[in-house]
Length: 176
Image (cartoon, rainbow, N blue to C red; front, side, top):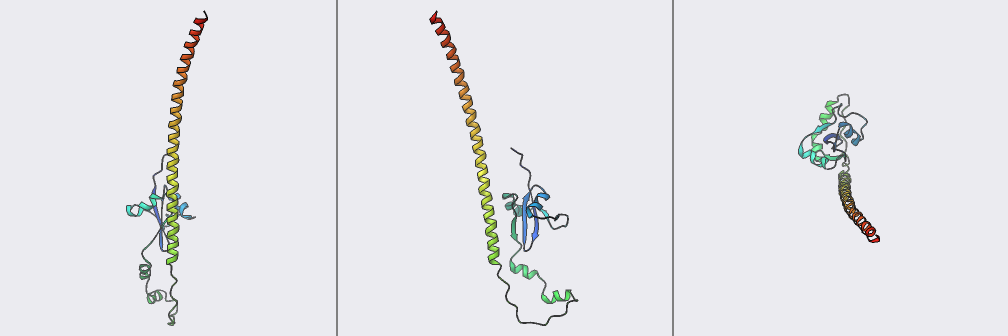
């Protein structure tokens, strides 16, 4: 059985989420994220050592675990006000105040669907891991049963060989 490799937990931001993955190396983390670029060299990915943040990724090695960074309200509150954004770019002309825009689409269903996908991935990974443990236990039981069979058959065959030799001697003596 191969020696298990030590896993580390890495994080990179994707949209409003942080993507965590437990992997043995930065290269493996980049592959799990599907990145063609070295996000670590760009400063866009990092090693995570906080036990609270590493628990779930370590439970599902190799799987990307997404966590929302704050609530939607907190994320919108962190944005600069419209006037400050406009002043930050003086090249853009001032906009005339228009009618109130339509409300932003509700992201809730998408967030719930993404969480359902992540939960299903975790559930199936756990089921497959349990099956792998059961397979290994069955392999160990089979090896033990085969060893017990071989030991018993060796003893019985040796005993039968001794009895056959004794019988042959006694039959020879009887024949004279």
